[in-house]
Image: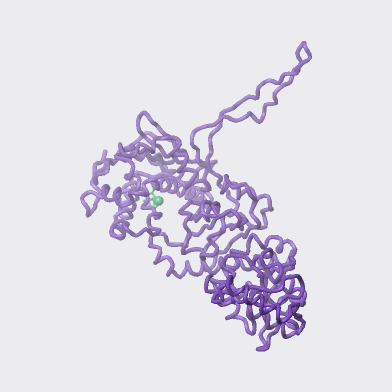
Length: 559
Ligand code: ADP
Ligand code: MG
């Protein structure tokens, strides 16, 4: 047996590690399973190039709780380590990794950024264990090794009698971390971080109906049929799907596959998404993923089911702020990229060149998808408009590139249920709705019931009235007014629309001068003139003898 001391500048690094990631102790499991996965994939590679002359087989990773002994085991069938390799990779590589990590980030404790999601590797085991053992057998023809360390820089390394290839990590769970001996807690972590990892992960067993067994039905003497119970068999409980949809080629996936994957991601989400966008790029950065447009009707769900960020199929976070443009954080789905630096704070992340490129790539893909949906099936796109307009309008306001692209598919619905693109709209109204300054006046209503009589009056003049009722539409109108030439928006009951109407000279007052004076007197007392305008001859299409309007500028001030 070898006894040794890990070469370390800090007397005892482990309490520091523990303290540092105090709120993220749970990531130890993700780190250890990632290592087990790496070890398995490395073996796969070595066998495929003929460097490891062993059978790769169907390796899996097993997580096992031994509650009585207060131990947690993580067992893989990967390439394993020789004693020399343990010395090198665990005592030196892993340790220097941990040390470097602490060095860099021990002052960043208060940065609520993304660094908490960054793993510090093997040594994160000491956040929850007061003693860690490694029993490992390399694929090479060398004896197995047994490494033990109790959290001080001292370790022991001796030969072991393990004969099957791979590595077993045994955590002696510390008194303050016994939650990690609970089945439910471990299952929760596996489902959170490992649901889509590429190697099957076994956690216990489960009973299922034997697929090879068909229950017999027999008829009793009384003529009643009875069916014997289904035979149950015990199988490994594999908690993950090693081949999630986003890792496949779009051409190999059908609509059902995307729906099925949506359900896998959000098991509690019963509404179908409206459509999806498959992301797949490998230059100049690597990114895969699937984004879904949900129906934007139920605000509460938007908060809960968020886009999840993965790195090589390992869950990192569902806070993608700074990575995905803000207007797209309302979408759902997965993005997976090894090129997003996680060991940095969020402000640094936002300044990172790759992250910026990723963000604009995603914006472009979303715009392209919307455009092709619009071009391929406009009718369907119009049907979905109400459910997606918030995202699109928000995107038009916040991302200039998206604003430009959206010209091709952003829709402007009329009160009659027609949908115009901006270009179609201006073509339709050019002739009739141009004011004396040669500006096209786009009329809109925000509430068809309340503004009914104004809408009717405008329609009688042959004007188009849009129905714009989303919460950010006033900002969008301002944006359009400043970006497009010769247009302005006016609410259908706004004061100056009357000028347009008057220009046509078709408004006929139904009131005599005497009546007008009388009404004027009456209304003065009830309608505050600093807030509203009273017009006594605006209407010709219904029985209303007058209109009370709020000037456009006052209304906008309120919004
Ligand atoms: P990283 O995974 O980033 O290299 P870690 O601290 O997680 O850093 O692990 C350090 C090294 O220990 C790994 O690079 C690997 O060589 C070795 N190692 C850790 N776990 C295993 C394992 N289950 N099987 C084989 N080697 C392992
Ligand atoms: Mg690791």
